[in-house]
Amino acid sequence: MMAASYSVKILLIEDNLASARLLQEYLKQANSQNYSLVHVQRLREGLHEITHGNYDVILLDLTLPDSAGLSSLSLLISHAPSIPIVVLTNTNDQELAIEAVRQGAQDYLVKRQVNVDVLVRALHYAIERKQVLESLRSINKTLENRVEERTAELVKAQEINDFKSEFVSMLSHDIRNPLNTILLAAGLLQNSEEKLTKEKKTTHFQMIRSAIKNMAQLLDEVSFIGKAEAGKLQCQLAPLDLVAFCRQLVDEAQLNALEKRLNLVFASSGESDVAVWDENLLRHILGNLLSNAIKYSLPGGTVRFELICQEKTAIFQIQDSGIGIPKKDQKRLFQTFQRAENVGNIPGTGLGLAIAKKCVEAHGGEILVDSEVGVGTTLTVILPLLKVS
Ligand code: ATP
Ligand code: MG
Image (cartoon, rainbow, N blue to C red; front, top):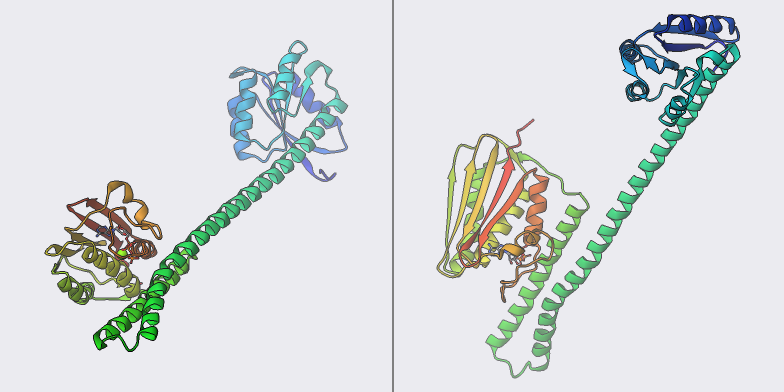
């Protein structure tokens, strides 16, 4: 609202000098309010003025030499959407005036009918109406934003809910298997104690131990995924000799490879600059990829782990000549509990690649799969080199 001391700044865009002078005269007579008026004769000058001055209201003649009719109105509105506009028309184009109001002008004045009171009232109403409109618009915008935020929250909550129920059902399924093994083996040990040979007993105890180990590992993986889903996976960066680290991972995997009569080789190329890594995340990524390559390989095959160091990235490539992954399954395998249809009776939970992907993302990198059934699989991880700050 306008206080009495407040000066109303008016921009008059009118090529007819006589009618401009008349309007100025009226404003001088209206002594209840301070008015300051800037008069220009061309739309071009008007556009220039509104981008530089702080106007409260525009008085616009609809018949300007450099712009005909309503096009000047829409240009002004697009340049200064919050300044109210009152259009000035001649007696014979009232229709045009009404159309102008429909297109966003606050009001219109028929030139010959203008007097001090009419002019002052039109100016004030225009300013106030525009202010109300603007505040309504801003309330509307705030409400819209809030609705959008809430909807996004609800969608996210629903997704988390779906994920949780799927997770729980998959998890109970995967825990039931080792539990059954334990139950069976323990039952046999208890009921047929005397009949069992020493070797048989040892086998049953071994089965129990390995089932417990599987469950413990599963729980570790699940809690890791839980942390990653909650966005709590943080990078703990420290300097690391990348080549030595990878070589050590390969050494650790050699035992499993030997057991399957696989040839596991490591090669590195390029110079690694000093960079920082999260050793734990790297171990999860490469450990899972190496164990998959070994697990899904056929005896006698080769698994090749190559580290390529470049100026800004490190590329880790793990290639096997194993069973391969059907094209249609490749994308979804990075989600939890997803396995390809050709796994047969190779054991697995479907968590490894999901964990690897989360870790890769936490490290700001990407993971790519290239595979053909019956030929083999190559998984490529590209990680940016993070520098010590
Ligand atoms: P685990 O949670 O014990 O790792 P998993 O190996 O089944 O179980 P992922 O490591 O997530 O789970 O792999 C998902 C699926 O992707 C596998 O079940 C398998 O179908 C496919 N897969 C992954 N790596 C390979 C590979 N090197 N060769 C063929 N198939 C693969
Ligand atoms: Mg795996």
